[in-house]
Amino acid sequence: MTADVADIAAFALRVGDDALIAAQRLGEWSARAPEMEEDIALSNIALDQLGVARMMLTYVGELASGDEDSLAFRRDDREFRNCLLVELPNAGPAATSGAEGDFGITMAKLLFLSTFQRLLHDGMVASTDEQLSAVAAKARKESAYHVDHASQWTVRLGDGTDESHRRMQAAVDDIWPYTHELFAVDDLSVRLDQAGVAPAPETIRPTWLDLVDAVLAEATLVRPADGWAPEGGRCGRHTEHLSYLLAEMQVLHRAHPGAQW
Amino acid sequence: MYGNDFGVSESLLDQVDEAERALVAAAQRRTGAGDTTDQGGSASSGVDLQAYFDAVIGADQKIEPRDWMPDSYRKTLIRQIAQHAHSEIIGMQPEGNWITRAPSLKRKAILLAKVQDEAGHGLYLYAAAETLGISRDELVQMLLDGRQKYSSIFNYPTLTWADIGAIGWLVDGAAIVNQVPLCRCSYGPYARAMIRICKEESFHQRQGYEILHTLAHGTPEQKAMAQDAVNRWWYPSLAMFGPPDVASTHSEQSMAWGIKRFSNDDLRQRFVDMCVGQAEVLTLTLPDEALRWNEERGHHDYTQPDYDELMRVIKGDGPCNRQRTAHRRRAQSEGAWVREAAAAYAAKAQARATQDEQTPEDAVAGVST
Ligand SMILES: [Fe+2]
Ligand SMILES: [Fe+2]
Image (cartoon, rainbow over all chains, first blue to last red):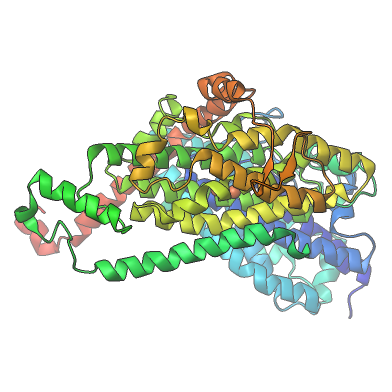
């Protein structure tokens, strides 16, 4: 069974939006990181995510319509297809807009996201879609670095001081509910799996859990119980946070319709 | 892409390469000759050391960290390199201000990478300063306490996207003109750091120029935005070269030591001459009605920046001094728990490694390491 072009575009949009919104949140850390070396590392990761976003959104443009910039800057929040996890503020899910970033929250988000991305990219290398396979082949190496970086910090913070242990556990607890959406099954994911375009998300979760569990254990952190599992990002029902993120990201582009930059 | 209009900057980059070759050549000439640590106690007389230092400076050779140097030379270098490092770190703020609002994904990526480069410059420079026997933590503390300065240019706000272009073209441009001669600085680690940094700054200048070029050839609103930014950044950029020569306090001794090679006014003139042609290609106007070519001098005449304003900004009363310092202090204090955790974890890991090194027999015998 061959894949529908619209399905491939819809999938590329999910992957691209995850990376774009993740890059936007990481970009907010610029000149604010706890160490100068970390400023450089967070920018590196943001640049990698932005690179994947640009390739994916460009591909969406080729398959459907628009280009990377019209897709990034001229869609409203209801049209974005990223998971909720990436749009959560750097200060945490319950933070008000503009609150100071919490490094523990950012590392928890990065650990969960990049471990998912690494496994997704690994699976996508075998995609029947050549373009997706090519992007994944490049991105998987970057994801491995992101996982490594987030794992190291999770361990340092979890097994550091009493305060850092408390804060890292709180961050893991806050972010955990949002990880379930990464593995959610819907009609699109079933069709993509059948057509060999992308691995079924639910099949990624056992390996993801093994990897994450190992990091949490080394960090002396407890894996939270599964329970509340907010979702909606994949069909455009987001948290209140995304609209503010887009307001900032899109303000200049939208103020000058048709302009080149 | 822009033809010959970058000719002057290209020649500056050639000078960086030349300085790099000279550095290698100087290192080869020096091998084995006059290393004070090799001479052990025999060269301990202050007179000999001073004479040797003077000879190295006189021969345009490099002083290296292991060499004896006058205390005032060391202090001057620490002050200058630290101020330079602080400028890179504080300079991340006005530009980082537009990362989340960059108007295209390509520009966002270029700006992220640029701000990241500046953090890297800060780190090389702190490392160069550390070779003089002071730690990065001490230097950063002096920045936070206001005991050391950073370039006053970063106390101006980035109000529009065009400011990112103007900073790249003018501020990075002025930095290059200032720093290319430092690639030949008499202190080896500083000279080497500057060679690396100048190469990256020239990319920054080109990127800023490209932003302005695109805006100036875009919609009328974009062109107005670009002109407004150039109007606001021109004189502060001229002020980056410091007070006029007649009023400059540090210049003479620094010249004698081979730390400084050209006067503030000479460098400022070089910068003005470089910008005039580039502004024409940009189709933007430099905000100086007195700016014109002087055939006799072979240079452009221009209006001096307001040095009273420069002094006010240096003393702390620029538009963003308070904001920039508060931002840095906040990043430092908000990140304290993370740095403490990293230190605590490293100590635990070290203790575990030491324990693992003991063989079971050692442990039984109660031998401690
Ligand atoms: Fe720099
Ligand atoms: Fe720069």
